[in-house]
Length: 493
Length: 140
Image (cartoon, helix red, strand yellow):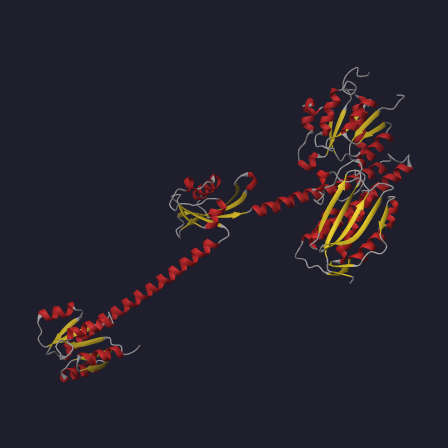
């Protein structure tokens, strides 16, 4: 800690020296000045804990000096030294801010005593100032903290709503207004009167009734049926350190998208279970009939049943493969290898692979022998799968003696692969549903065709992953054309 | 019994027709089949079967029930026992069987069975329904 510094300002050299000697002897650091101007100069230059000021000096008077000192430092402590001690001057001086006065002549003890008192006062003032400044700093920090918290609360994606124990709205953020579809919530208004969702009011009321720190969770929907928001509210009581209930804090979350995902997932699982169950129970039926000996008298019939069971097994295997493909294609974050692939080569190879299948169905595949060369950025396996599905459908849903025509050309910025069949065609109302998982056109002609109901979903997904699209044109009873459009990379590569 | 009794199966599930048909034929019945409700009614009127197995959900979800009521109204088939086949209990958890027993008029069927049904059980059920006529003097 630095030494206590005292400044003595008096035009009498004897007083100056006397004070210096006494106060230095007490362990203080003492400076002196012969007049007001010099004293002010020193005061400006250094820090002093106490000034002893002669009231009557030539030049700047003691009173004027006092004023100047307090202007520089409101906590400056000065003791007036006066030769003409009178109650009036003393009162006057203390009114102007002097701490005390000392009448000449004074003894060293009197000087020491008044100095000690004045310094104690100075210490109090300094301490008070320190506390004041600290409090101001704290308040500033607090204000900053509050505004930061407010900003955070206002930026939250979840709605926040605070209700006090008198059921009044205390705090809310813009997200809460948005989720609750309310323009305003008057702070201080009763929750039951200003919240337009009765379920929320009920949750708040229930939470206010609970003593323990249990969270209440509930879901409700807001808005008209065609434009509903599913909201999940999590409410918790706010309690003070004594466990006294102060109110309720409710977090509102828009779970509409989540609900939709859950619904789609549940319906997908439902559909998949049904699609897996159907071939299995058919196979089980054939096995039962054969094992029970119901078909043993007719070996031809028994063989047909076993063939049908095998076909259902193959269908089940394709279904599982298609499910895996759909799931893989749906995982967009999985990195896929894209490379320049010759559409022409992949298409020709796939057509070749279907020669036997086409023969079996008595369907002719028409494909020009010298297709123009086109290249796309693609995943080779997926491209193969795309053409496989289109060709397989064109053959399966054809009729004996029919044909499948495969064309490859360009249109605009796209490469066009068109697969046409002379099959049963698709009813106009069903075209929009094609490509929906497990959707299959049900007509007497399609009933015997074993399909997974996923082929076109796979086609659509593959095309989407390659920034392409599928066009379907069909005439019932005449046939259908499925056209895959893929973005062009270059010609003659 | 000189001529075999005829059973009509109305179902759009070809695998079920094959399995049930084989089991019933092997048990001495004559089996005729139809793959939709419209054809089912035609066959019922033309063949005058002794028993009809009817799938509840074919092209339309209620076509089976509608056909059952249609059969009840037609003089040729009104006394023919009808068994409704369904797979709704597994899918929906809803069990029609007790309702079918209590409210014959609503369902219009003599029995209500859940698929899958073992071929042997189906044969036993058919035998039971064919041996005990629902109504006295139902021979034409």
